[in-house]
Image 1 (cartoon, rainbow, N blue to C red):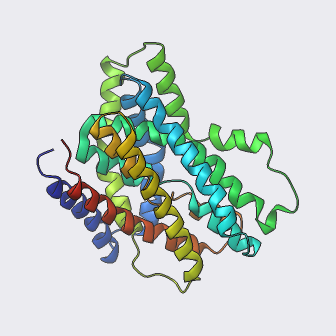
Image 2 (image 1 turned 90 degrees about the vertical axis):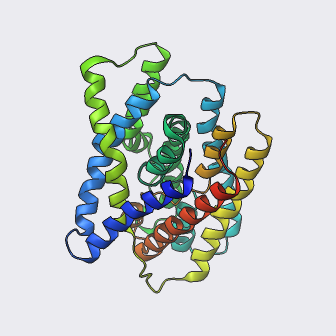
Amino acid sequence: MSDFNFIFLKTLSVVAIGFLLKKAGVLTIEHGKALSRIIFNITLPALILQTVSNIELDFSLFLAPLICLFHSLGVSVLSGFLFKNEIDKDKGISRMCSVGFNVGLFAYPIIYGLFGASGLSAIAMFDFGNAFVVFGLSYFMGFIYSGNRAGRKLTFKEIFILFGTSIPFMSYLIAIVLNLTGVRLSGFPSDVLEVLAQANTGMALVVLGLTFDFHFESSPWKLITRVLVLRYAAGLAVGLLLYLLLPFSHLYRMVLFLSLILPAGIAVIPYSVEFEYDTRIAGTIANLTMIISFALMWIFIILVRPV
């Protein structure tokens, strides 16, 4: 990678285009939601199938989803202590927003721009673990404190529906099965996937610009600050340890570090609606983490130059 500053500026410029188009009234947040559905249901699954089905899986790549899972479980335990004295609705939204990462929209285009296909393979496997966190752990954290659950329990059927109806998650499963069985996508199917996959980066960055909002509502800042401190203190500490101690390639260790300081998953916003939490808190956390994560990633890449 010859000029990482140029890559970051190029990425930020596309995000800014989306933001300015929203401010000019050319595009709206509703357009962003429509594009997000296209990304999560078409272009991102195509990118996953194209990437994961063709990479050479080894121990280091299988370690990525496990790191994501165990890190998130550790953060969820810490959040239980940190927010134990809060009322249920604040405890629920705080713990829910403490785990899970925005990989599909935020990380894929940046990691691909910085590290190419090799980095994309590592972040894709990390995101496989993240799917369990977002659709499982984060959802469960929100569910158990929700005032509208009326004493009912989360059933296996509901959990199965959450995972089974996620096209990106099912794409990971299919891609890994294809990879392990030695089936390689080629010819016309591969060409179609390549066209769709190439559209993912630009669309994702434009959607990021459409969802950026620098107007933060009057929200309980003490609660939000504690969520941010927990996410980034844990991410930076674990990421730095892994970067220094893991006996894998420099690129792989960098991607793992960057993965652990990604923004909160955008699923926290629809979850907050479903569980009747304060959506302003979820929205503020989502916006702030995108800004903080982008700055931290840029600083880290400047300090630790890829080799």
